[in-house]
Length: 482
Image (cartoon, rainbow, N blue to C red; front, side, top):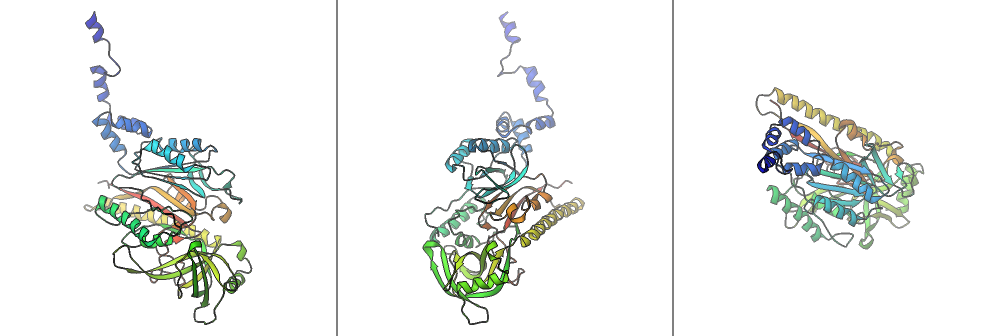
C-alpha cells in the first residue's frame, strides 16, 4: 500500500516523468510566444529555470529595446508606480533608467524607489524638469505637458508628472558620470577631471576614448557652456536633428568694452557695428532692435549669439582652435551697458541679436520631419541593395527608440497647436517608443545655420541651443536575410 501510494502521488516541486516529458516536448515557438508575454520581473525568473528557457529568453531579447511611459497622476507615489509597471510590463533587462519629474516629487524618494526596483548597479538619471513628453501609461495617449507657472495653454494645473524610460542595449556599456560642485561656474580643473572620467570609462570598456553618444543633464543654475566646449574635444559624432526656434535680427556687432560679474554669471558690454567706429550702449542697441521689430520686442525672448574662436584643450592635450556660436540671454540695457547672462565674452568677439520666433520654428519642425523621412528611406534603400548583393550584405537599420529635448518656451503656447515638437518623430516612427522633456538650454552637437554666412564651411559649432528641439533617434542594424 505504501509503495502504491508513493507511485501515484507527486509533489509540486518534483513533477513525475510523464509531466516532464510532455513539458520538454513543448514547441520552441510556443515556448517563446509564452515567455514573450511575461512582464519583466517574471521574464527574469523564467530565464533562470533552465538552459532551454534561458536560450529562449535570449532570443526574445536579441535586439535593443526602449520602454517609456508618462503619468500625470496627482499622487507622486501612484504616478511612479504606474510608469514603472508600464515600462516593465514586457520583457526587458534594464541597462539604464532615466526619470524626469515635476516639482511635486521628492527626488530622494523617487531615487530610492528606482534603486529598490532596479538595483544599485543600474545607472539611473533623475532630474526635475519643466515638462514631460511621452505616452500615458494608462491611456496610451501621447502628451506634451508643461507645468503651470502662471501660463496658459498646454500647461497643467498640477506640478505632478513623470516620464520614465528604461533601455536594454546589448553590446553597449552605459554609465552615469557626475560632475559635482558648489559653484555656479565649475572651475577648469573640475571640468577637465569630468571629461577625463568620461574618456577613462569609455576606454576601460571599449578601448576607445570617445563614446558613441553622451546625454548630459545639468542644473539650470550652472553655466553649461564651458563644460560643453571641453566635451567638444575629440572624435565624438553625435548625430541629431534640430528644430531651430530663433531668428537673427539687426546688424552684426563687435564687443568693445566687456565687464564680467562672475558671482552673478552676468556680462556687461558695449559694442560697435562692424565697419563703424561709433560705440553703442545697451539702450541704443535695444532701441535699434525694437525699431526693427516694429515695437514688438516685449513679446519675444531676446538673445545675442557670440561667435567665439578659442583654443580648447583637456588636461595635457594639445590645444585645438574651435569656432563656436554661444547664445546668451539678454537681461536688459541702459545708457552704459547691455547686460547678458553667462560669461566668456571677450573684447573683439562678434555677435548678433536673435529672438524667439514660432514662424521660424514651425517650418524647422517640417524640415526635421523631412530629414527623418530621408533617413528612413536611406535605410530601406540600403536594405534592398543588400538583399540583391551576394557578399558584404548591409544590415537593415531600424529605429527602436528616441528622445526629444525641447525648450520650455515651446509647446502649445508657442505654436498655438498641440504636440508640434513630437510630430516629426511620430510621423516617421509610429509605434516606436519615444520620451522627452521640456528644459532650459538644449544640448546637441553639430554645425548651426544661425550664423550670417550659413553652411558648414566656416560655420560655428553651436552645442547649446535656445528655443530649439533636439531629436535623438536610436537605431539598430538587424542581420540581413540571405
